Image 1 (cartoon, rainbow, N blue to C red):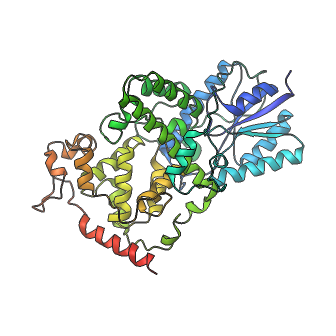
Image 2: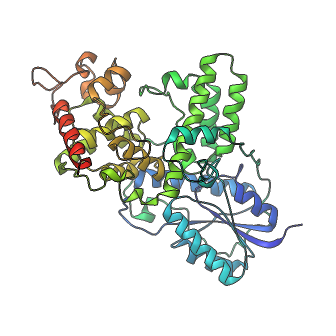
Image 3: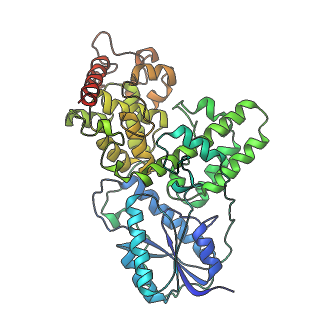
Length: 473
């Protein structure tokens, strides 16, 4: 028998019904589950998000609402501070408990404390669960019980730990919430006073995400992952980032499917590819653990040696980078892909972020914010980790003197120019060889396309001098 007559499930980054830990327990413990999502109340501008990701969120909420309808339930939407709105909802529904899945960034954790305080004051249980990760930060520790600061030993520990099994699909959430219970309409971009986006984003919602997961595993992209993941042209990676970001798929189910594929793989290359992809899942949790133990990484460099490092980049250079108008074809292709789709291939993310910080000398926080405002899969822990890695200031960072050359990166990963021509159409008739080095004749590669705005070799030397001088203080 259920423990409670009515409970609340607070949806956050878990917008699915299949293998949702807190929702599973809410359904088991409550005769009636009130599913609620609380919309943020910022308007027009936000340093960490923008219309592309919010448009995807709108579609995910629409999908979730339909899925709940099919179970004989109803999504309740509120707007404002989660603690205040949940307190109102507890009183309106006479709920006897609140359920949610844990978040790991400092903002989410702070709100969880406030919600716990609300429940304590009212006198009802507040039950929260691990769901977004296979292993929380406190589960993967060094031999002395401290946090890891480097990925490789973290990953060895992470890979060796037992993984939790999936919980399956819900069949009921009990009695339908009272039709008179107040709910906002499903949101559009108007809710945040954002202009419509023309970005070509993935189909939102749990069903679409599950189809992408199936395609990645069964259509053999996974089996060639190790060999092709650094090639930006075509579909060479999972493209599941936004689905993990919004919890449209379960990390437990994804891991289990990868393990099953590895067991059935018939070649060593396929098994290596699957192992390589699983290590990327560990990278995701490594950065979440860094954020858990070192939340100050949002405000300062992880590496103490480089705190206060000068970043003498200019607004003009940042603007050229943000518009894909630098005269470096691989950089411009990446930025234009981001603006057009809300996605950028991971290899190119490294190229463009290192270019902004090491060639243009702009602060990594500018790029971090720009990415979060435009990425449909923007995950603040991974994004911060990636930017600090590229800047040479982060956890497990490449040494500051390791500076990628955009021209040689192009030769390694887009030698035929397929990726560049896709996203920089004015270069479609330019020979691929001309993408591998700066123009020798000081002529633009094509009419209307800019010359390189800096000389890579000169700026590389400047970066080395800046870092060496600061570290030597």
